[in-house]
Length: 42
Image 1 (spheres, rainbow, N blue to C red):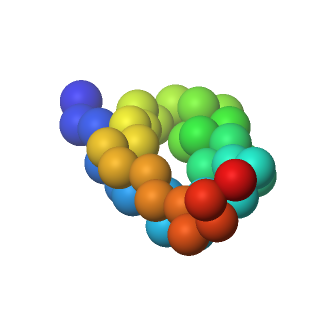
Image 2: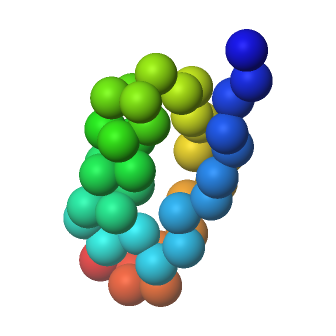
């Protein structure tokens, strides 16, 4: 089995990352976010 590794650019509240992880889990594919970047300092 393999793991899809991805980065989350301009993360915001994480909606894209969470959606991606949920889809991968539903498809039975392992995924891992290896880097997150956010431009907003708040």
